[in-house]
Image 1 (cartoon, rainbow, N blue to C red):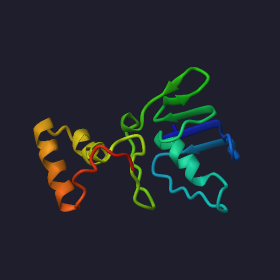
Image 2: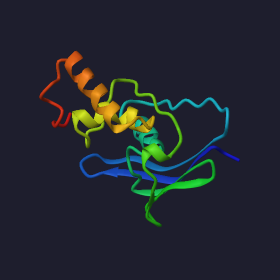
Image 3: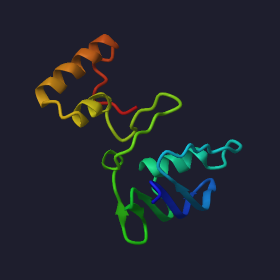
Length: 138
């Protein structure tokens, strides 16, 4: 059974028209897959939809047999509950989260206690000379 399945996945952006058009893809466990194409053809958008960082306009995404995204039935499992890893080519921040929350995110997922998270975040803010920016968005 495929580990990641995309069925008729479409992603449209208002300004840029269609980024991904009716993509069907089965990625089996232990497969090595490469998305190859020119700039703007939808490679990154596809990966972002699989990870849950973008939402398909239509179609379905399944991970290990579980439906994680379907606009037709209103399913959109958040990235942190999809149980897969994602490594950015470039450094990335969550645009919907403050500087503080971006730093705390990984520690929260590791189930650190709130007090320890706060202590570590403030330590890192000092180290990176970002004190005073913790409530701003990237």
